[in-house]
Length: 137
Ligand code: ZN
Image 1 (tube, rainbow, N blue to C red):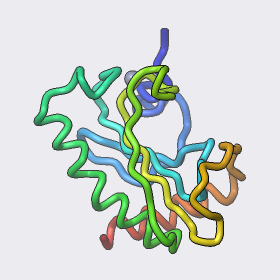
Image 2 (image 1 turned 180 degrees about the vertical axis):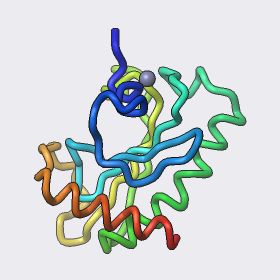
Image 3 (image 1 turned 135 degrees about the vertical axis):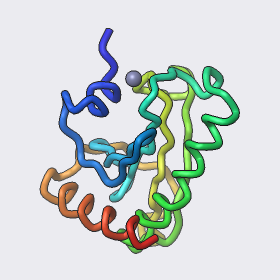
Image 4 (image 1 turned 90 degrees about the horizontal axis):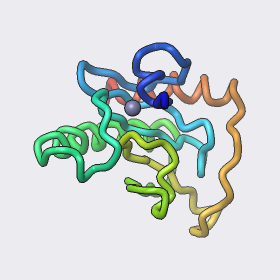
């Protein structure tokens, strides 16, 4: 069975990239919980965080900080959540380890809304803005 994130990382499926280096990428979630929802993904396929070494997990979270800074600066969010789901029971949808960076906005409230498909043009413009902010983060 193909892995969507491996396909995206391999360039076989398009995505809105906001960050990439030799071991990790970050893309916009196309079903955002809130505007600016970004995923940080190691290039190497592991299904769950428990399959990774402590070193690999630490390298993953080292990327999360500058990416979260860039996302928050670009979206002007009032707060953010970091999430990492493991297994169907935890609502892990793509079986390839990823960290969610989810901007939160005071006027929307703290309840989790239903995910909706993002507007493609908005996603593209926002991705470009986040990329610029990550570079200066
Ligand atoms: Zn994969």
